[in-house]
Image (cartoon, rainbow, N blue to C red):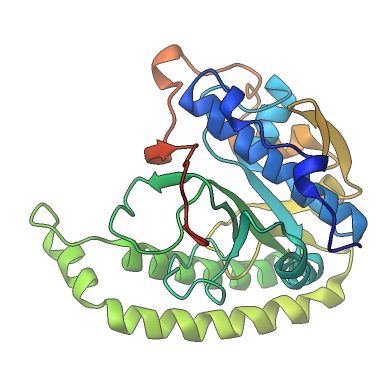
Length: 294
C-alpha cells in the first residue's frame, strides 16, 4: 500500500456538518472507520463490526441514533498485523493507542483504540486520566476457544480471573465505597503485577489456540475480560453490511450474534427514556487548535 495516500482527499473530514454535537462525533468516527476499512482491505485483514455497532448496522443502517462509540473485532493474527501496519499507514490526525504507544494508557480491558487527535471525549469514570482522549474506535482482538466443554470451562475461568483483576484496578476510592472496595483499591499495586503476569500467559494461550483453525469458538481475546463465544461459522465468512452509507464487514450470522447479546427482540428499540449515550462525560468533536498529540 502507498503510505503517501491522501486520506483527507479520499475521506474528507466533514465533522462540522453535523447538526448536533453527537452527530458531529458520529461523523468523526465514521471517517475513522472508513480509513481503518481501507487499510484492512488493502492488506487483507479481517475485521467485523460487533456489539452496538453491528446492532446499529442491522437495525438503523448506521449508528444507533443516541450512540457515541464504535466497536470492531479482528481475529488475532490479523489484529497483530494491523497493530504494526497502522503505525505506519494511519494519517497524522489519527493515533493508534495501545499500552506501548501511549505510556499513560492503563486501561487493561481495552488493549487498542484508534483516536482522533482533533477532538476530545472524556469517558465516564476516567476524568482524571492523562492519556490521549480524542474520539475513538475500540478494536478488540478475537481469539479461538475450544469447542470441548471441559477445555472451554478452563479458558472461561482464566477470563473470569482477568475480569476480576480489571474490576479491581478500575475501582476508585472514595468515602462512599464499602470496606471491601477500599481494600481492593489499596491492593492495586499487587493487582497490576498479577494482571501483567496474566497478560503474558494470555498471549501464549492465544498463539497456542491458532492451531484450532476453524474447529473452534470465536470470542473476545484472552487479553480482554469479555466472555461471549460464537461458533466459527457464525462469524466467518464475513459479510458486508451498510453502515452510514458505506459497506463494512460484519459476522456471517448477524442474527445469531445479536440474539445472544441482546435477545430475540433486538430489532425493537428501547423505550425513549433508555435512549441515552452512556460513554461520554464530556464531548467536544471539534477542536480548533490542537497540539501534535492532543
